[in-house]
Image 1 (cartoon, rainbow, N blue to C red):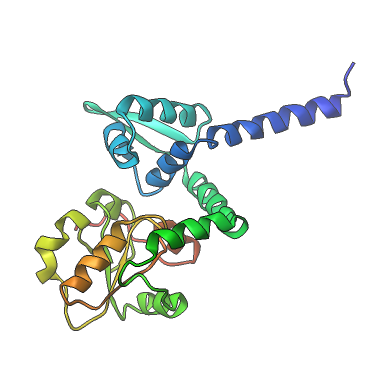
Image 2 (cartoon, rainbow, N blue to C red):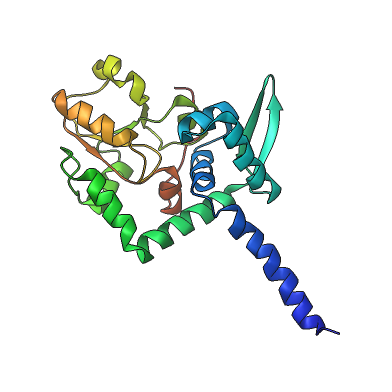
Length: 225
């Protein structure tokens, strides 16, 4: 007969491993990252992640089986959301761990940004302090739904796809700081490139809403745009 202490430990770590298996897929990690921005339908998640609706649904079912995400029918659509904030905290912690332990992460990012005008390193500490003091114009270029789910107070919401038509809404005599979903989101990169080409003084900040929250920034929710 096995030692009951060993049976207990085996059972506990088996449950922990279920979470590890659920997040062992790159696409499921991307889906979690997207859901950290706010609830989404399968259709939107499939488009944003480059998956078919069928494949996105299969990945979401795996995440749902481990209770990392929840689903609710709203009209004709099924809307997915994270089970709670701890799931997003877990994802961010894992992302930061990978950044700190895997040199490949920085190498991939450096290769992607190489040669892109305006993407040079900035003094992030000083820039974050300007954002905190509202001394710059903060531009949120994510979709409106994500802005409403959580954003920096005072940030202007102009989704990237609308930016070209709404340049007149932005001041030309003040530095613009664009942000999106986090360090591996390209929306703010494209926004800064566009703004600089039009003569604006603009920089990108890598942090996303979950990073700001972790750093103690106040986060506004459910505000009208």
